[in-house]
Amino acid sequence: MNSDMSIAQHLQQIKEALPEHVTLVAVSKTKPTTTIMEAYEAGQRVFGENKVQEMARKWETMPKDIQWHMIGHVQRNKVKYMAPFVSLIHGVDSLKLLREINKQAQRHDRMIDCLMQIHIAEESTKFGMNEAEVTSLLSSEEFPEMKNIKIVGLMGMATFTQDQQQVQKEFAYLSELFERLKSDHLEAFNLKLETLSMGMSGDYKLAIEHGSTMVRIGSSIFGIRNYE
Image (tube, rainbow, N blue to C red; front, side, top):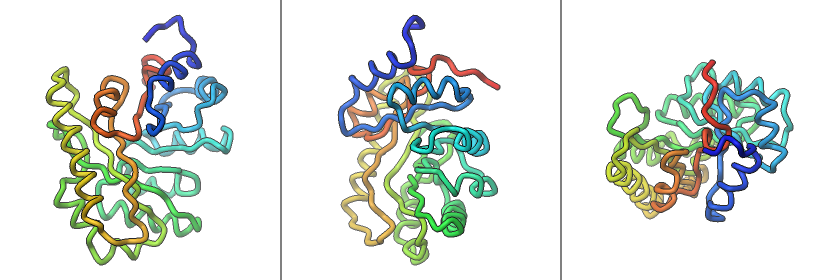
C-alpha cells in the first residue's frame, strides 16, 4: 500500500479494479469514525466490523445510510446489540446462532440477511460449518419456520499462507459448493443464494477469479490497522 495516497485514492484504485458485480466491504474494525468518514465521503457505504459493540457504537453516531456488515465470529449473547440495524451477518456457523438472530430480528420486526460460514481453511482456529452440516441445516424442517432471517449466500476464509495453490484450492471448493447448493433447488422463502463472500486484502483477486461476489478489504484501504 502506498502511504502517500489518501483513503479516497486507495478506494478509487480498488473500486476501479473490481468487476461491477463484486461488492466491496471496507473493513473498518478498530478504525475511528473520523477515518471511516473519509471513506464515506469518498462514496463508500458498506463497512465491516468484527466486534458487535464497537459496530453498535459507530452505528449510533454515523450516517444512517451506511450498511454495517458483521464479519467476525458472533457470540449469541451479542446478537441483540446489532439486531436493530445490521445489514448482513457473514459468520453464521450454527443452527443455535441462526435461531438467536431470528429471535432478535423478530423483536425488531426485521428480516436479517445472513451468510453461512463454511470452514475451508486448514487452520482449526477458523470457524465454520462443513458441507454436511450446512446441507442438513438448510433442508431441516425448522429452517423454513425462521421468518425473520434470510440466507443469501456463503462465506469462507482461506488458510493464512503464502501457498497460492492452497488458497486457490480452498476458494475453488467453496465456489463449487455454492454452485452445488444453488442447483439443489432447496425450497424455502428465506433462502436465496446470491452472495459468495471470500477474499481479503491479500487474496481478493484470486477469490474473484473463483467467483467471489463480495470481498472484505481493510489494510489496502485504511493501512495497517490500529490494534486496541
